[in-house]
Figure 1 (spheres, rainbow, N blue to C red):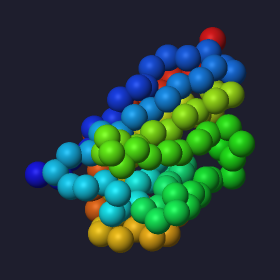
Figure 2 (figure 1 turned 90 degrees about the vertical axis):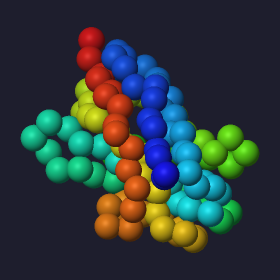
Figure 3 (figure 1 turned 120 degrees about the horizontal axis):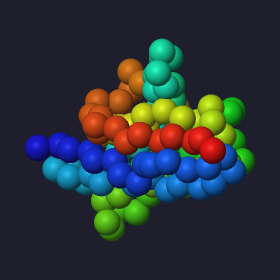
Length: 126
């Protein structure tokens, strides 16, 4: 059974950092792209970042460029989102998701992602 489980969310002050983890089971992560999405209250879900299955190609939405870093550990079947210089507007539920087999390129189009985690809350507040 394919499963993605996020962890690492929490409450952090503005300017702080968090690292989100995405644990995959039931499939071999290295053959799929992994995306990170977020949804704030009253807003639509948006793509934040992704990492492709080949050459670790990455994509970031403009608002997180230079602050967030996406990575993967195919040995551990894990993906990560390191979030630095967090801002109150980063507050949201964060989800990881996987594409279909291949995932040679990726972006923030949620239609490309087939399996989703349950989400983890990130709150940036003083």
